[in-house]
Length: 112
Ligand SMILES: N[C@@H](CCC(=O)N[C@@H](CS)C(=O)NCC(=O)O)C(=O)O
Image 1 (tube, protein in one colour):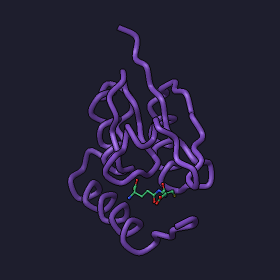
Image 2 (cartoon, protein in one colour):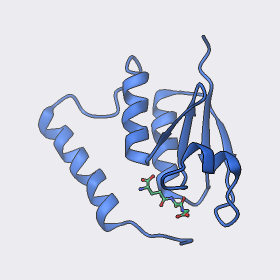
Image 3 (tube, rainbow, N blue to C red):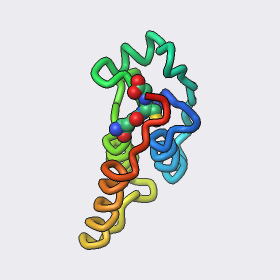
Image 4 (spheres, rainbow, N blue to C red):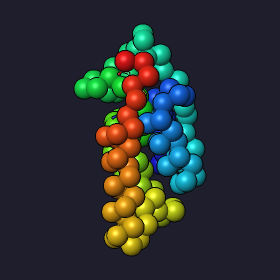
């Protein structure tokens, strides 16, 4: 079955960029659906009822939420294409450290 991949997107969002980099690294084709975060679409509310935020990856109709979770999902599903994390455990821990750092320290909420 052909993969159907849609990204609920908002172009200035660094969290959406994180997902788009992962998709680009894996060479995955997807449809980007730009969202209005002031007047949220019924699709966004249905796909992410807990946080009501982008990014949301919709893979064959199933939503995956939270950018780091999405990146991990992408790496696991398309595991035959360029791995997103280094193979060395120490280097992996460093990559995870900085991803977590960005989440905790560099999080800026532009609109809310
Ligand atoms: N922890 C989330 C953060 C996502 C986030 O902050 N999204 C913002 C846009 S940059 C959003 O959808 N804001 C709308 C809202 O808070 O209602 C992630 O990593 O995906």
